[in-house]
Length: 298
Image (cartoon, rainbow, N blue to C red; front, side, top):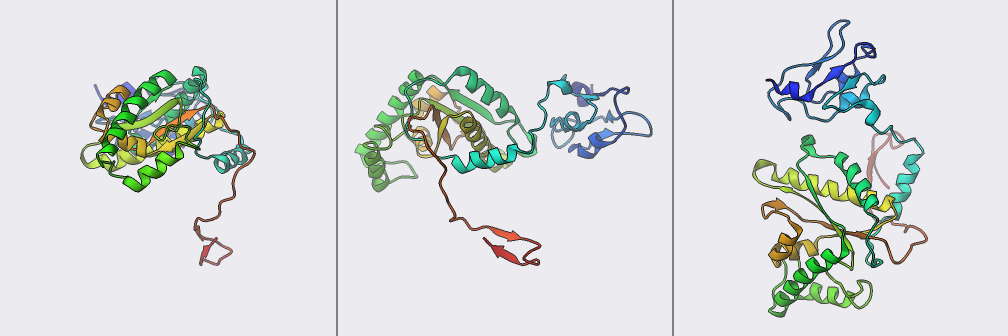
């Protein structure tokens, strides 16, 4: 049986207007439309670069809802966001920040489930869909993981050993921050929950796996912020877990051969912010009509 049969692609001839949009957006180039016939899926070897990318663009682009694939029907999809959503997203990005003070309570499980459902659509190179998500949304379990990792970190520091990203100076500064902004927890910032995007990272695609995981991390943070949650993207705690506290990694359930660089702490923020900040330190190189083809620096 050809792999195309498992895709269960179908175009309802009574709804299809033969516009060819599905063929035009098919990344795997496995759809064709001949004459007045509705589109069909060509045989292919396997999913990915040798066939269907499982992107469902064909289902999403059809103006009449004629296409089904993988058992998914068009009425099960969300409609596009209205244009005014653009301003909302601009405000969301402008107001995002690292939250290092949290309320000591669990986030509503329904909110976490809603975010994770949306995360199924986070982008990945080649639509590989190999990135895994580990979420610990119980603050008691987070405390247990934190205690193990923290003890290993302090034991190493007592003997002058630090992670590959730290030395005695940075460690001392983080220790100092426990007295103020980090509420006694230089490791997880007191966050009651953790999100980790990770994936098996071996062979020629290891670098792409890292990019996919980092993209997923960014998407999770924005989704969490959109639900009113505070977030903090952390690399040092990940280094501690990977380099100093293998037991904590086991408690997270993340295999040793998986890429894992960024942890996201999240929860209800303790300190509300009244407005965004006004950063303008980044260089923007832009080719524009107004510059008559010259590179302009904003």
